[in-house]
Length: 307
Length: 263
Image (cartoon, rainbow over all chains, first blue to last red; front, side, top):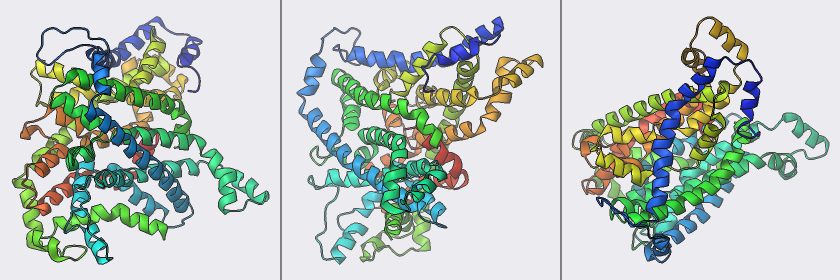
């Protein structure tokens, strides 16, 4: 897989190939090709075209407007606020959930009997329905009776309006985001660590790096490199794509304090029907995710081996 | 010590969700950390979520939609993965490039034209709207290709001599042999589509057609739930339970599946 995409052709062509196999290959792949084109490539190109026109729902014609939609996007106060919030959210959630995931993975690996139990616990947020868990967090963070505020009051602190105070709301969503992503990252790191050959640790111990920090810097960390890069890209993409907590808990409020990119895109496209602006945001979103995905796909195969 | 604390924080919303779903609303104001459960309140909360909110309908919708998506994804992706792995054909390199490209496009990008097309076809608020746009999974094609490539060619040649068609080879030899990949993909697909909010929110407004996350979000936001957090949490428990329980049984596949890189 580290070979270029067309490498398998060489391998298969070197064998005797019946002519009918040649045509069946195309036939078997046809449904997938057709659907990739109609459901993904054509509509994605459509968005690109829409972003350069003044198309609106229900309009029969449209005109080319060049980069007007992008200019409008870059001077749109809501978009700029939403982009800032998204970057602050990603800048908080990604490093915390990655470092915490790595730390927990190291601690869990050092555990004996309870390893399986911890793994199961940290996996729960990955499978759980985020909309349901968001509402559970909302009750936990309730300004008057929520457990978090009850605990704060018990410890002598002021109660907080976690989701309605504009200074706090984004960080409350970030905390929920960290909660959601730490488990997944932990498991990816554990999977990476479990693939490190044992003799490397033995070799390290002969060199005097018996345990602890030295062993980590000498063996674990360098060999976790590909997994770490993979975790970083996937966490950045997931954090950048945050939607549920915003849509369910805050609707971007109070006063735009928690507005984020995908929520802005959703509202502009499907609530306000500002198609030009929404198409431009889609393209910007695609640009960010694609850039990270290129990195992810390149690491894809190397990581798959570890898991 | 740190691990125990982290595990407790991870479990906290689950525990609280269950506790509130079993307690009367008044118990939330008691000032204790967890509200005291009562059988009557539990019955009332769950009954409300199941009857006043058509939660069973949402869950049936979710189950049907997820099953259809998964079956169609595999039906489309497995032959393509096989063709990419084992059959030379013109444009194969191009298709593989297209799969890699498709892996980079998030579902929200083609959403506007897909919405317009579904609206013109009169298909908003239908199962088709929920299922059709996601039946092509580049990830599935990629994954199946990976697994199929290592399948021994001698077995394929023998099967062909025995009169297996290429399609029969896919369904009767390749897929069973790639069972770990199928299980891993199935878990990823079901988790993603059972929990998805974005696309259902775009194409569904009709209560009867809602999926669990959308139905729950609608229940939360239409104000019915503000006086009744117990019923909302009961709904949350019931929507979350199937996947969490399934996870206990399929833990290995799940971890493997998510590990190989779905986003």
